[in-house]
Image 1 (cartoon, helix red, strand yellow):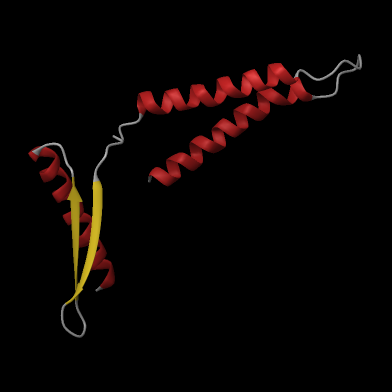
Image 2: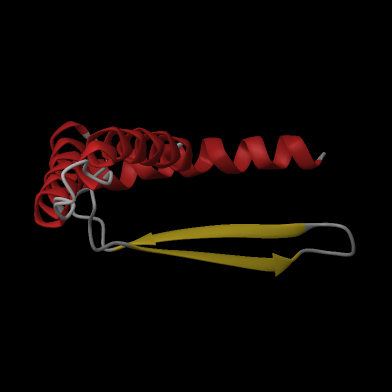
Length: 113
């Protein structure tokens, strides 16, 4: 889901940049140089504005946690898949992530059966 969001946001930012930069970089009729400095300024405003909006509206929390995946053979046809989510900040975070991993791994097991 995050990949789809990033692709859509990147496409929209690229379209906005093209719409804004095309008139600035088009060859002028009076033979004056294109507005390169203005184009760079507009591009930076679009990119930094998009990054700022993403940071403001995103509910994804970047943190310093570590996720470890371990697979252990369990007989001839079974494998135990263990997820360790380390450095979580609170017991609530542990329980929330435990429920998410349990649901995700349950869906994976259901798809493989």
